[in-house]
Each structure stands twice: as C-alpha cells, then as structure tokens.
Amino acid sequence: MNDRIAEIEKKIEDTIREERMLPDGCRVVAALSGGADSMAMLHFLIGYAKRHGIVLTAAHVNHGLRGEEADADEAFAAAWCSENHVDFQAFHADVPTLARKNSQGLEECGRNVRYSFFRSLCGPGGRIATAHTLTDSAETVLMNLAKGAGPRGLSGIPSVRDEIVRPLIRVTREEVEAYCLHYGLRFVTDSTNLADEYARNRIRHSVSPVLRGINPGFERAIFRTTRLLRQDEEFFRKLAREELDQAATADGGFSLRSLDSQPDCVLSRMIALAVQRETSVRLDCGHIEAVIKMIRSGLGNITLPGGIQCCANGNTLFIHSESGRTARWKTPLRLPETLLPDGRVFCVQAESSEIKNREKINNLLFNNRINYDTIMDTNSFVRSRLPGDRFVPAGRGVTKTLKKLFNEQKIPPFRRDRLAVLECGGEILWIEGIGPSQKAAAAEDTRRAAEIIIKEC
Image 1 (tube, rainbow, N blue to C red):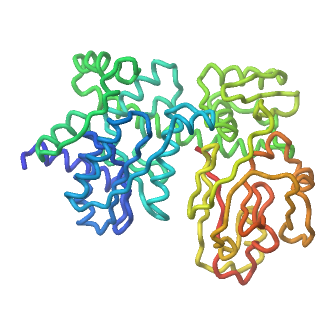
Image 2: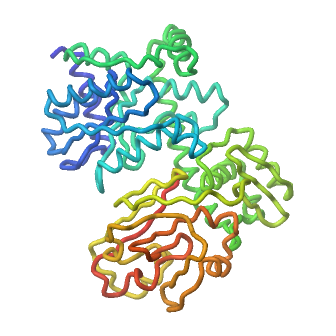
C-alpha cells in the first residue's frame, strides 16, 4: 500500500472514530448505488466491520427512473456483493408514480423511499452509512449559495444526523477515485451525472475547476467554513426549538407577542421549524423575511410554498395547510420506526426498566408512554383519523369520539387530519396530541414500557 492510500484510509478511520459513527458490534446498512463513492465506502467497511464486530449489509434501491441502466446497476451491485460475501438487499420502487400520488418532487420522494428502506434494515441501534464525500458537501454549499440560502443551507452535508453517518465526508472525490484505482474496484457511472441540465453537474464541470485553479484545496477550505457555520446553526436551532415550544398556544398557534420578542436570527429559525411541522418543503430566505415582516406588524396573511397558509390576527400566528383536509392515509406499523406519508418518522422506543413512581408517570412525557406489550399485534397500523373513531383516554374510563376529544384539547380542525393514530388489532391505542388509551397506558407495575416519538424531517 502506498503512502497516499494509507493517508486516505486514515482519514476515513479518524472520521469514524472522532464522530463516533459506528459503535463496535452494531448493525450497519451501507447505501450502495454501485458508483465509485459507494463502492469505495463498502470496500473500506468490509475490513472495518471485521475488526470491530460489525454486522454489515449493503442496500440498493432501484427507483424505477432509468430503465435498463438502473437494472444493470443493480445487477452489478448484487454480483459484487456475492463475490465478496457481503449481505445484499435490494428494493424496487416506482418513484414517479409515488411522487405524483404524494404530490412530491422526484428527488424528495426518492429520498423518502431510500431512507425508509434503509431504516427497515438497520433496526434499533443500527447505522445507515452513505457515501457523501467532501466534494459533494462543497458542491451542495455552492448550489445553496447560488440560491441565496441561509446558514443552514451553507453548513454543508453533516457527518452525522441521527442514525445516518457519512464515513467519506472528509475525503474528496479525486481521493475516492484513487482508492478505487489502487484496489482495482470496478464501479458504474450514472449517465445523469454527465448531463449539464442538472445544476449540480454544471457546478461540478464548470464552477469547481475554476475554484480549484484559484485554490487547489478549495473543498477543504469550504469544509472549515461549514464546520464553523454548523456549530452556530446547531446552537441557534436548539434555542429556536425551545422558544417555539414556549410560544405555542392552546389553539394550535403561536403567540405573536412571544415571536415578536425574538431577534431575527432566532425568529427566522422558529418560522422554519414551525413550517416544517406542516410540510417537508423548505422555505427560502425571501419567504422567511416576509413572515418576519408580518409578525412584526401583527397582521397579515401569506401563502407559502407547499400550500401552507400563514396568518397573523393580532395575538396569534397560525400556520396550516391551505388545502384544508388532507387525504386519508394508513401505513403498517414497523418497529422501531415507521415512515409517515408526510415525511415524519413514527418511532417506538422500547424501555426495559420498570416505571417506578407516579411522579414520573404524571410528567409531561406521559402522553407518549405506553405499555409495549399492547402494540405487538401483527395487525397494527399508523393512520389518520376516520369518521366515527372512538377512544377511551387513559385515566378517564369513558369512551369519546375523536371529534369531541380534539375539541376538548382545542386542536384546530386544519391540524386534525395530520395527527397520527395508532391502531392495533382494530382498536385505537394512542393518538398524537391526546396520548394512550386506558388499555395501552403504562402503569406503575408495567415491566416493558415504550415511548412514542414523532420525528420531524
């Protein structure tokens, strides 16, 4: 092995260790497209997995977009894994049809499909490894800069986000190609990567070479800047989330007085977070500035991308779907995580310890805690509400319609169809915003409890 390849491998190893990406003995799902980046990552992880007792699976998604070329890529990836004794799992999806059905763009829909599949394979405590490189991160920053993005968009691709890890994030594409050449790794080339009608490809073919002529190490220079921006962004987003929760009102809105007391740097992030709770569409700076102006004035009505209506009435800011009632939806419960149609993730986190005292049971998290054994029915779903739904809330002992419960909780009508309902064996056991049923509630002597968490994208 020459010194350069040893240096590249050390970068990857250091990244995994310093970012605590892959705990010894965990399950790792490696996203494998068959391209140079993913082949280099998988090749490295094979050796790493043996040294650290990791269970490795290669996962490939055929999006149904490129016909025979995509089929050939899948066959190549499957054959390589078979030759190298790597567990291989593939998933076929008709992304164009799904995108139309869910009113999503192809890119957003494809991403949701991929990560739903990856999560189904990795299980609790597992990791999803993707092959994004330092070059990918630099290109993302340049694309977002051209669009006028804010600090989050200029923070690059994070090395770790929840269970998703990126071992190659400090390695350039040129270094990946050198790695593949050294080890004789074959790979496929996606023909769409060569077409200049895509913005990323124009940056790759035209902008990056100019920047490299000015500074051969421009990708690492951008990385240093993005790391500083990300540190600041993480702090401000945490603060914004806390302030947004404090500003929430009983009728599903947000106190204009609380919002108006915030500086723009915090308020802009609060707005972005509030909108993300309604839609996966991300706002640009212009939209956020318009909402800030409306908040400062105390009155107004703005329609945002994704069919989101933003209304200030002098006391309260409401953010909701302009289209009103959403289509009914139903998806099988998958443990520990279920991807919902709106892009949120329904998580059931099991606990083995006993809930010991009533004080803990009665805290603010109680409405998310259930008896784990009650949800083990194979006929279990997460769905939207249905006409005539009835429910026995924990601690009340009386059956009520969901409509009456929502009215009592002052949940606005425009939010109700988005709320997740957990149904097991034909019975509703938990409702988002309400909590568990009498049957499903964790009691003092519950030996196996679980906490339900819904993650925003």
